[in-house]
Image: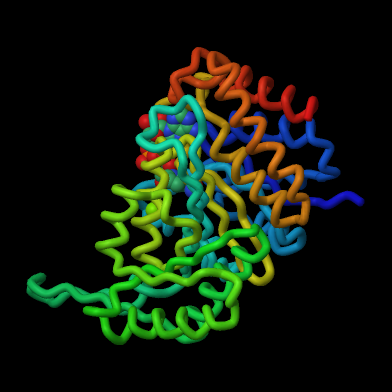
Length: 338
Ligand code: NAI
Ligand code: MG
């Protein structure tokens, strides 16, 4: 049975890393059909709209999208396309795996952490951000809801069960932010009781930062609110060698958008040296989401094997001598052999 997904190549290095990613997906025989649509600068130039209705419709129809990085023009009052997509489809879970890969210059080699970040509320509300007329007092609000906290914590536990994970750590600051973070923590404790097979742990965010740097191997799944999740997931990406290997999944009830965490990298666009791995790992997560777990695993293993045994084929950011194409070709060859 074939499944159609929306494909958004995106801006800058987007089309290069998307072509590489689709090459590997094709090598896996996933039975995917690609509905290619536009967003970002490409769409603005062609259709006068950063996020055309046809693109939103395609995501709504197919419910799954693989998305390259999009450039939001600075100035002109454009809101971030990524934020717009998150709001439009209520993509409440931002799932950010950080996995160690061999042959990187990362500080640690034994990390396998998934951060599950609440993506719609917390400290990142558009409303309620004010500054006094004299410019002396700025204010913003933090709003966590029981519904929002419950669905993100439940998502983390359900994911942990599905992926055979052992432990969920709720990260909070309930000792100081007694109401907002307190609500999140009390919901986390309640939901945790429904999953006796998963170890539940709670940690205050500042301690979590230190623990992540000192002993990252103690973490498995982290679930947290919007601001803490934004920061912690980048911290985790740094532990495993930076953005070149960091996928980001945006999951809602009715749609899911899989992307690389990095941006459109205008400094290297068109040079053929962009690392395709972050988008490829996002594609692997997408295959898991579509129930093709063995194929998702095959992509991660092929990246691991290529880096371990054929490191020269990798792109320069990972210390290789290769190009986007040589890297993708090496990975595609390995998934074909698997
Ligand atoms: P960036 O992530 O595009 O680049 C930061 C640095 O990392 C650059 O030196 C770049 O060459 C390098 N880099 C990024 N991805 C790479 C890859 N796959 N392989 C090798 N090197 C890579 O961040 P920057 O420069 O702040 O943003 C550029 C544009 O991207 C902006 O317009 C921004 O709005 C957009 N952006 C879009 C995102 C998305 O669509 N999810 C996320 C972040 C930024
Ligand atoms: Mg961020």
